[in-house]
Image (cartoon, rainbow, N blue to C red; front, side):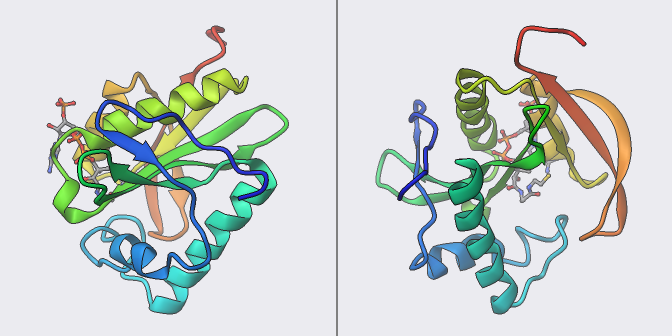
Length: 175
Ligand SMILES: CC(C)(COP(=O)(O)OP(=O)(O)OC[C@H]1O[C@@H](n2cnc3c(N)ncnc32)[C@H](O)[C@@H]1OP(=O)(O)O)[C@@H](O)C(=O)NCCC(=O)NCCS
């Protein structure tokens, strides 16, 4: 896809790029009420289609998205992991991951996020931010394991929750 770019494969995973025809793949992530329980779901099929369109648009405008992630062994969809814009001028993006239910608890979020962090570092990003629902302990553990540090709480509109936010500097500075 023109303008798009994606992280290199990791030990067990490869990244793809969302395309308009990927509706059924999108439904298996954002259409699953269990997967979206702590991120504002359940979502209607219309909302899933809008989310897919937004990811495609983000890739066109910013060269990144929440890329779809597949297992290298067998090719099954694992979920999505990637970036959305946060402060383009300051070279800061927001990192996130959402895995299909069958892929939880195998370290895939951490592995995919490390691939995304490497992609961002190579492209000169200054820092990444991330947040999670206060009850999402798996997400918290993954972010801490990736080296993120807690900074503050912030209102997350889709869940109307005050969520803990984290920062990871990737440009070598400690500011
Ligand atoms: C949250 C999510 C991304 C975690 O991905 P994952 O690949 O299952 O996580 P991992 O297997 O890498 O586990 C990460 C850590 O959380 C721990 N963990 C996993 N499930 C847990 C649970 N239910 N409660 C507490 N800790 C848990 C793991 O032991 C691991 O800890 P460690 O680093 O000390 O070993 C995944 O469960 C998911 O996609 N959930 C639905 C969507 C979502 O909530 N996305 C995040 C939005 S912020």
